[in-house]
Length: 290
Image (cartoon, rainbow, N blue to C red; front, side, top):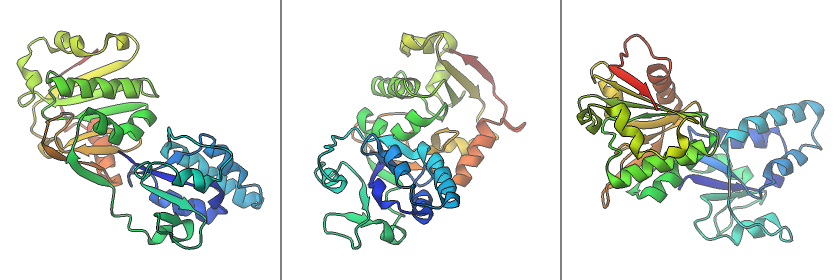
């Protein structure tokens, strides 16, 4: 699953606290704040009332930026209980971490906001394991539900494999049911199994849920893998917000361990230049839209 953090909105007392959270939460870091409770954002806004007008304006800007890294918690919340009680009554793996205004760390893994900068943030930006469709979607979910456009760069894209087809359709359904309007797919004409289909523009729609026809856009680009060989060697799913390196691409291989990790800013910007801005050095062999 993605690194979902439960953060007590009451522990954010000033602009410095917002700055601390923003520096460690986001798509480049692979850490996300849960809407726990669902009214987390209004509660965080309420904490700004005691700030000066200048600090309040700065804090509101921080909150606006944090919206993209807020994800639905889908956790039960009892309004009768204190926030910390609600957080600690969740299953042990419900959150990657819990941030409160406690003065000292506790044995149950609660991290005081005053100690956030001391936490080892090098852990958790990626994960290695054996993934099925559900666990893969769980890891990708912050990207899928927050992005307006997605780009898949996958050398060996093979949606005709049954489990990989299920994963592909789950990616489409999760993103299209949220904010996404377009998915672009870049494949190697020589390496991909897609190259064995002479009428790819007719065959690919057959495996895609028909509910997306004429409602959302799926673009497929095939090309000769020469000038961008290095960029295609590793597979990515990314958007305007950030992205994920997929060790085996958008495939499920039962019993085989692989790595998924969030990409850094430099890699993200490089991918945007190559596959979105489309420099002259990148030449598509063919393309079509579903």
